Figure: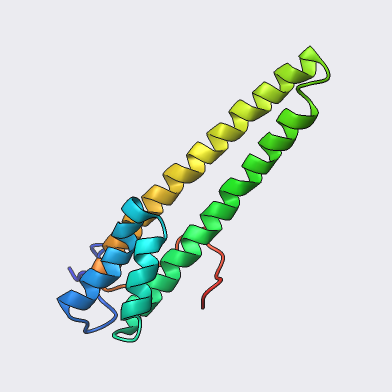
Length: 140
């Protein structure tokens, strides 16, 4: 059986271990430093390898996209708490229900982001490109 038939991705490049490690480190630092660590590595190392450049762009696209997806429920929660809660006790209960439901949406988005972040680490360490689902391509 070949590696492809076993479900393994073969590297698209002949990149060195250091290049693949830096590409993976962009995603790995995302767990610790949000976007600052990956941004610094990408800005410093993007000219060294196309894989590092693509990894940085892909991570930043994913990070910005998921922050936007999380901001939408937060804005809805704020408006529901401001406009519905003070007027009527029953609408306050509806507002609390909306608040709890949207918190579950945000939790789901954060778990999804973490899973795709781990997948990105593995893919870039293997030397393959990865674009996370639900990512808007701000950097091409």
